[in-house]
Length: 69
Image (cartoon, rainbow, N blue to C red; front, top):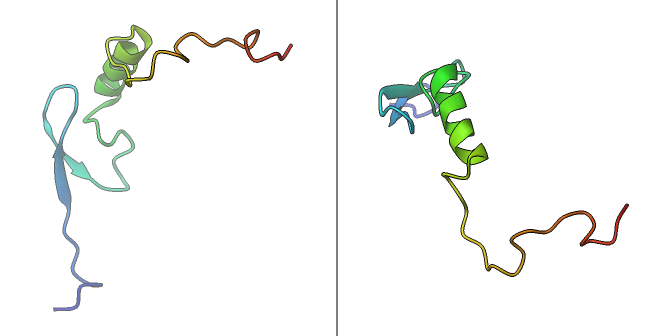
């Protein structure tokens, strides 16, 4: 078996609805199953339902704080 010729399609769960999704270049929405699930996830980030933990010191930095105009 030549691994270059062997193609295994990875199946992953959609992060929003958990539908099984093929992880392929043809799936423009990967890892999501649809544009709708992608937008639901994006909205959760905008509403700050999803966050990346930080150190607290740099939580609310604006361009004024950086000394740029």
